[in-house]
Length: 228
Image (tube, rainbow, N blue to C red):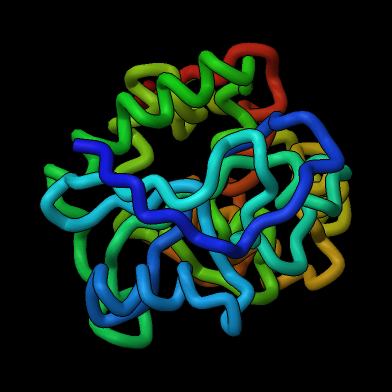
């Protein structure tokens, strides 16, 4: 169900749409999040918000630049707001009682992402979390987000699990590869934590180990093979 809930917080795009950024709201409930996303004083917004019951609120038209990414970078793009569609998913987040996303939310998210991805010709490697594009500042949508459900439908990259090989990179070599993949590595620990949160959520320790190297190498290959 799509509900129009217009936000005044947008301006003109300067880049073509090439990515989708997924967020959690980090607020007590949908009403509080919508109030903030539609408050001109707050100067934040997103294109869509998905409530816990699966209802979708459309806040900003896709041809407009919503204000959801903040200071961010992905694959060389620094004006992420101009190049992305932002989707907020209602969840209190790490500071207010982080919990699994509801089935209704993900059931609503999947066709929405599929349609946006098709409409704009977005690659699955550019369907990312807020923490991927802003590792120094953000943790959302977090380690409980079911990326594998999107990956199985080719709506996001899978976690590689097949034919894994450790390239034996030094830590510096890993960070070079991580930057090549897309991350901002100016804060090395934050970049590694963000990568683990997305691709190895069961162990987020900021340590570059053999498993991290294997996963990243596989992601850099033309066709990552895994739970997708």
